[in-house]
Length: 489
Ligand code: NAD
Image (tube, rainbow, N blue to C red):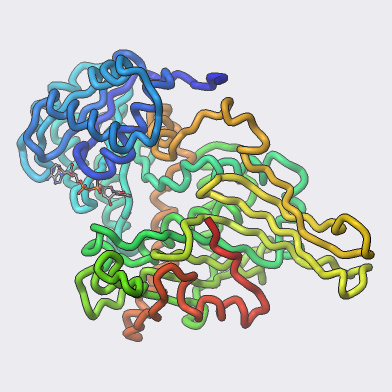
């Protein structure tokens, strides 16, 4: 494999919540992959900081198990794992009290290196940890903090959190993570848009009929029922992940690929979003799997609230009021317990202005699909003549730009979104992180929609387990003469 690993500066990464689900499933296995790729300097340290009482050896054992369980088939030499574990430390700490802070301070004192603090804990602890980092002298100019989602639950709480963090850190020290931005295809989307002459001239309301963004999951709420019932799909998925994708697909070309140039353009998109009309939103709640209710219960059972009015599915239509996009619908859809796990952005181009072919040749539209998961890749549907005799019949064939076809897989190093983003933190590159004003603008757009439901006591529509959501979602497009792209694995 051709190594394209760019070395990073010496660093210490403290993971608050280093024993939690996210740390064990994503952060630590990701760091280990970066270690194996030669990207973690010998003297770099990863310091788990969490409530559980254990020493560094106990932590190393926990991480060994986590890598075994969540390593995702990554092959490595046993000696590599031992060497990585040797770079781990652990401090039992109480984010709400005094325990452990002195030990952490001693560990971090006097080191000339990048210091990153990952807040992989409940959001209620973000402010507490920031405050204590300052109190214990760790919030110096070198420090960077990584803040997990959810970033607030509405505009007011997001503003308050931004204000708290700004008391202790400058904006260029704050990395608000949205792991969707760390996906390979999301960055490829920018390469395709801004690295080619081909697409950009067509990237506007004159040539694009509409754009769809779908993030479909087959899983239910799982063990996150209590959190999810207070959140719902709008807060959990639309306000962050789907809106970030919308920004990248719709933004103007930034002057350069630099953090603020990109984030300025994204912010302009959010600020230009039209308010969503009530009949342009469909909310849904999944039902139990028939004959398998015990294993796959319905949403209300899963969250333990028989009267829950929280949505596990949302589909909505919006527009962007600017010169490029005026009049072009953007349809966003996300849900749990759907037919297939699939995240895709689809740009559907307009019909040709005039067809020279007979009616029965069929009319086709160019469709550009940007697939985030599974099978990341980009496909452009082009219309050609169906080969063979029998006259002129048109068919769509994909011009496939998927990595599997175009690039020798042995040459591609798989990098998970979290590991890429963590390395960006160490490099000090904020391009793929949300700025405070972006997050607030996103809440300013979603808040009135959520408040509207609350005011109307809106009840989500039931939808079948393993379906594409409530039928009203199909209607949302059908009444405008359009269709959702199929949700396929
Ligand atoms: P978790 O409940 O599994 O882990 C919480 C961690 O916080 C544990 O290590 C625990 O020891 C620590 N902790 C709790 N109280 C503490 C205290 N007072 N002082 C010090 N440490 C304390 O949570 P998680 O699922 O790992 O989620 C962590 C964060 O990541 C949350 O903000 C969550 O919203 C976000 N997130 C998680 C996922 C995921 O897949 N798990 C996905 C996206 C975002």
